[in-house]
Image (cartoon, rainbow, N blue to C red; front, side, top):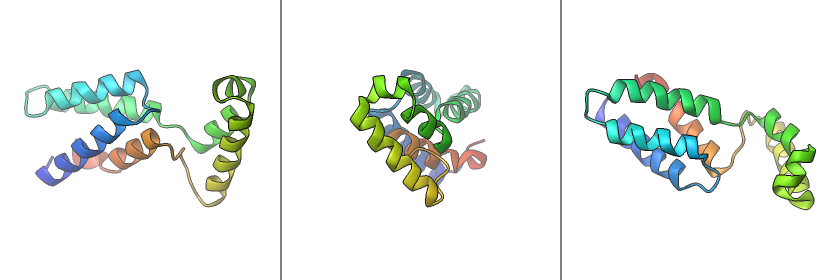
Length: 118
């Protein structure tokens, strides 16, 4: 991975880790990847990191279904769930494929560099 890509992914990784919506698994994978930079484990940790990010990013249809479910109401509260649902439907209509929360946005930015990372 060239230095420009590395710098970009490191920056986006810190954004991900600082996002309130970042899962603990993604945060741990991110830290493991950061710790492996420049070591013999970098490629292996890069592959694990990418796999975790691909598992964690929320497809827009998944967000819509969750926001419109009983569990979504419990997690967000009924009013916020309705707002999340309306927002998700709006961004989907505009072509969004994924949730646009700070964590998912950072993940999408990192995954856009996936091929250059490997």
